[in-house]
Length: 384
Image (cartoon, rainbow, N blue to C red):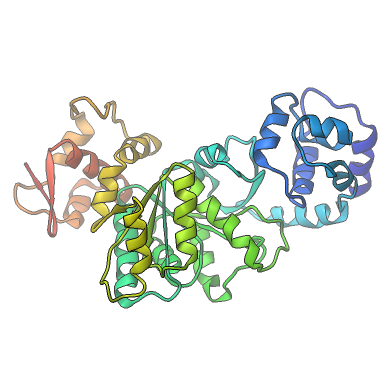
């Protein structure tokens, strides 16, 4: 097959309908190179196949804004590695997602420095759902751990996909708390997806794949390199509506993530702490610079109300509502409302009475609350 691709690269006549198998192999070849996703989008404004890129001269490539020397790199493509890498995709739920694909996260595509493609292991469908990034210290305090777990679970139950970096500490606690609820979370890695780093999170990574996804823009076989993690952080914040920082020292990677989120035009949230806690100083710095101080996950939900509406549509629950108009209950919402007492009703009672899944109930409760039909109180909800 490697010889066939090499021959096709040089001699085949390009067609209007690209061959899917050939395109897949050419995109795998692109993963070996550092090519701007934004430049590739410019290229695809004029061409409909990545194969065409391999047939252009240096001069032609530069007319599309590609860096000098790309033609030589394309000629030196290691097609044997392409064949080797393609075997990784034989297993179910392993995907290669080019920036031209409808599966590529829309928010990330809009961000400067968007990667040309993503490797995905798991449920690729959740990449298009609204995401909240949670980042923080690798060595959090007990309170930081609790905050990561509680914020992640509340946000996940409200319909957000929790996105983080699979690192030890805050990242891992946020992922694990979401997995414990049976909900989806996305882990963006700084290595190729054929390895897990840190190794201690291997079991967590396997659990994430069940309903969520592992994501990387690095070619298979890429090991641990310090320079990879800023790129990983850019993807985490680029896919997310907002980034929540839970404990960070004054010099930490979490502050870099917050800066990236701000540069990408996304919201930054930070949890304050004791002035004597060195892991609170980074969050205090962010708040002084304009990050939103939050004490509860509900404050983030209120800030991003569009999340609820989008998620309701994605779950095929009829909303038919504009955020700026009065919400009229349809039969589904009226039925759920009738399961809620005028005294405190736990979410477990609501789920049992309604017979609905927790994800659907959480989405519907949030919209009922936003439109003043119910109130969230200690221990559950009550009807107003």
